[in-house]
Image 1 (tube, rainbow, N blue to C red):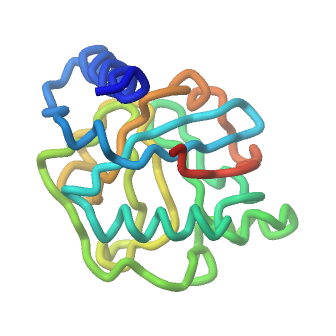
Image 2 (cartoon, rainbow, N blue to C red):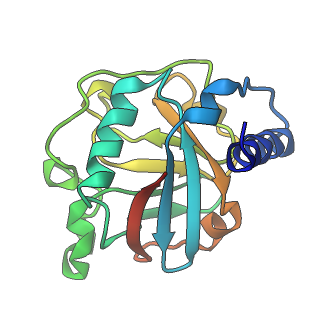
Amino acid sequence: MNSRHACRVLVALLLLVAAGDRVRIDAQVDNAPLIVVETSQGSIAFVTFPDEAPLTVAHILDLVKRGFYDGQRVHRAIPGFVVQFGDPQSRDRDSQALWGRGAPASSGKPIGVAEITRRRPNLQGAVGIAHMGEPAKGDSQIYITLARRTDLDGQYAVFGQVVDGADVLDRLRVGDDIRRVYVRE
């Protein structure tokens, strides 16, 4: 294991210990894609779980590589709950009342399955796919939990875990810029 991968695993373990929960972190994290979200408040990095949510991870990676998230804004930020982004409407400040709502609030290509597993609970820093009541219709909206949220377990596909920039999450507010999102090789 090289030092970069060892660092990812160590950070993920420390976050999980700090959250007070026991979740299996294994070799899957070592080779998993790492996504970086550059915001106006700083950068966040999260490791993905392609072994448990392969279609979700592939969908999000495709959106990231196409620049889908670049230039969007945070459209939901609730202290102690979640930060959420992924609505292309959020590029237009004048349509803020519509952010996060309806069919235009997505890429238009739902994942088509709900890769929900109890193996990845909604710990602090969990990264999941938001949906409007039908998990298989989840698409581009990503949420990141700001605290352990047992009420979300079993309802949303958790496909990643924050491994860097957790302090940035608490600073994010509605309207903050998502400057760039990319896969760190």
